[in-house]
Length: 352
Ligand SMILES: [Fe+2]
Ligand SMILES: [Fe+2]
Image 1 (cartoon, rainbow, N blue to C red):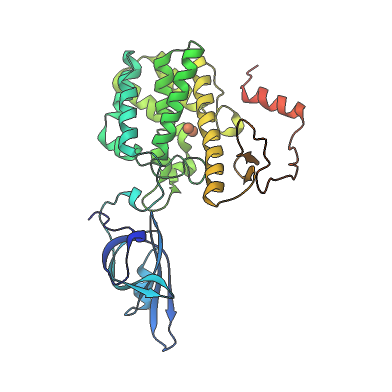
Image 2: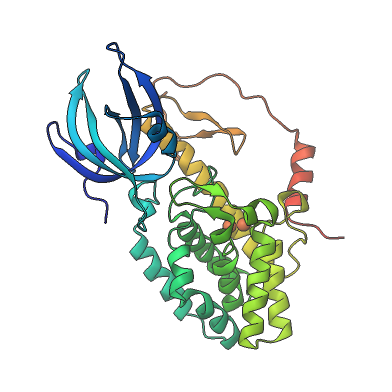
């Protein structure tokens, strides 16, 4: 059963027979001493309070927060806000589209999938082409890759975030490959495959969580293994296989960022820089759009935790006028120039 009407479109007195995530539940006692179930139901458009009167302790216990349920009832009004009076609530055993219930990429998934397929078909070197088609022509893999998030709460931490991030890395990687005369097909292959193991690192059936593989193995090791196995099954050369494994393993760039090897080829370095740019520039964009959505004033966002700094959101050309609420408080520098230089050298992955 597909999701019918979203919470933000529900109207008072309307009957409900639809799928929702139970975000929270509690068994309460009314003033007349009757037990009732108090629920918060959610989908991608928001939350709504719900109450079920004919209930029991065992029913309350059986409901699992964070899972999808089929709810039958009617929309009522309580304290001038819509509320659902629930007649029946049952666990939905059907396959659901996670994009109906959770925050999704602002980009359309079909459009992104087409862009991915065009990039794959632009590859002419036989080995990268075979490896890319092995993954991206497999409908079972694609069905996961299309919805996977790229993170839990950092950049692209939403449904289809992995696809969005992968395309950014691929486009940035292609531009760098041209400027620095690197092998374009190998760069593209590494960019498109670098995070494939995120499909096993996270689960996203109704909330984004680390899986056991994610906790214990991580997407670098798992990704290198997926690439090695695929290259073996396809009979690809040892040299290409090792280079692709190296690109996946080194794409975080530094030991302290989780890479067991630092990038040691132009293509691997380009992948690292392209990945780094997608992660950082998306965190900047997210900090600015969060400030916009909260209608904040001032030239700087709140401190973006993941970047450990506030982001400038004024006119990039510099405005003569002082915007309302201009933040004048000086930000304490975290490092002096010497530290910055040392960090930059480290960022370049100087391997002595
Ligand atoms: Fe990664
Ligand atoms: Fe990545």
